[in-house]
Length: 109
Image (tube, rainbow, N blue to C red; front, side, top):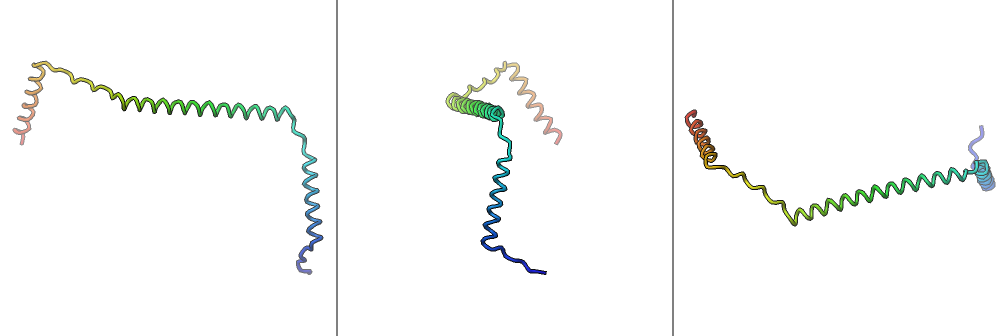
């Protein structure tokens, strides 16, 4: 059995030339691209890019709106709601209930 024979320079040049010929043959065998298909691909790509641009603009507008609302909120804080005004009778009833609860806690201990 013969051992491995390393290819010489002429063999490598011939192999490279054959590979180039095969690649060229595959390229020539490829069917030509239909211009209508290319135009359709370009149109789809443009539609997709336009949709992305619209979404990006909407997101930017939302962020700007939120920043503006936050800025206005810092400038003009909301007025606190006024505490409900109790009548004298309601205040007395609340005070009596508080005292009764304290008395009940002390007597149960």
